[in-house]
Length: 84
Image (cartoon, rainbow, N blue to C red; front, side, top):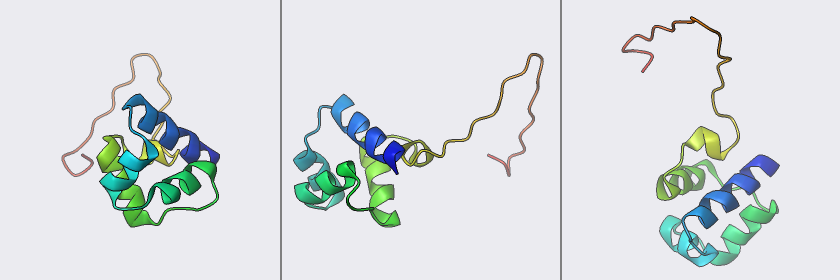
């Protein structure tokens, strides 16, 4: 969960939001945001989704589980409409 704490604080600060600003934007208290950033409380899925939307970041990035595909030269990846 350390990755989440770090990224939450980073995303909030990059946008010059206070903990109060973030709390107001996702409908939780400033104290709740502080607890999330310190790792003393884990936000429920609904709150995580609101955070990602409010901060305009990818949900998977926020929780530290972004998709990483190793890059290889001359590699072509075809995605179907269903994959996207």
